[in-house]
Length: 474
Ligand code: DCS
Image (cartoon, rainbow, N blue to C red; front, side, top):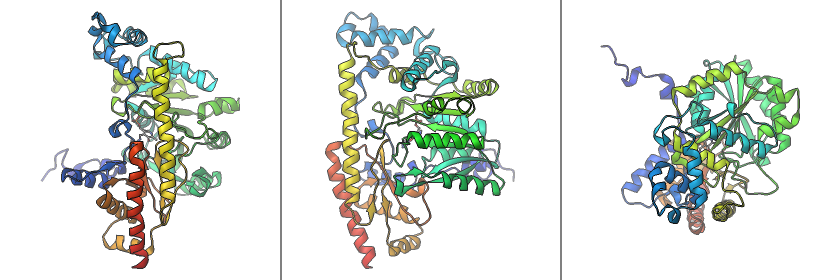
């Protein structure tokens, strides 16, 4: 009997192979429990507003006016909206011929691409060309477009940090390429070990894999580390020597919690290294409105900047971008993110108050979580320097590992499922991000409201310590 194109057995095998743990088994079990009335704390996704974070007022005022421009003709508009939000909405609407209801230019509205270029210039003290900045529906879309452009088949390898955010493993599977892991060093606060990187490349090459690109996530997800300038230099030299494109995932650049570990962009380090290297390494850097203190995950705004990419390749990427244009609302939020209210403007004080409150609270929550995990039996956890996650190592006793095997579960999945059933805390098992053999972790976000944090950690500790006692004594 002939099969139809969407019959399961006839599907693209790459689609079937693709996995995305952030919304995997744990998440589905959590939804089931929730349906049966159990209170669930969803710490599986970096989705701040879903856990109560309020949007930045200025951003929503501008978006509201852009969505409903007739409000600007209302005599009360000046009572409801500050003058700088009205002016900003007019500024964005003047860039389009039909407002938010019209398709925008390929690559995004030129005026917003210009704003992004100015932001990068100011952030890094180096030139940035708006023609080489494309606005996307969240960073994910951009990452996928670039990976699709690079990967030609199974023998093309992409170096990805382990642990990593599963967008990378998923997209590489989907496009039929090979993921080449390089391990981050947990005992060095998830730092990068260049020896290990060289080893990974050598091993991949010995298997006939052509390593073509390297991903860095800075600040890290799920690991939370901020890469130092010297580490970024080493990475860039390595990419130069090995002819690798560097994909710099910098979506957490505003989520940094320690003054001595600031965010430094790969673009800045590359430019500061000067020629010839600054003209040689191909770099694509990504940013998003989903993170930082904006947390506008649902609005799907992001951008990528291309450095040292040949013009003919830029034309090909332009073509890919033109197949699916990005949404207008997300583009405007990118504009606001890179060009927030300035000190002399009416909305500045409120913007500063709101953004500082969010970042200050995230910093405190990161501390409460790390301390909480480190107070638990058989749990060790590095401090979250940046991003939105905590990634404790769970030292599972051999008997727990055996019990997991008997239950047909990966040991960290077994632990996380029991944690979920006992406490309602929905995490993601470390195996979803990759980890060294025999070492187990889980990932939680640091996003639950500050006032709930101590309660959540107490409930975690109670579960964990009982679990450990059960399997150590068994
Ligand atoms: N890059 C990293 C490192 C991310 O963590 C995420 C989202 C993205 C890119 C994509 O973001 P947008 O497409 O929304 O811009 N983080 C996911 C996570 O780990 N949990 O939830 C979302």
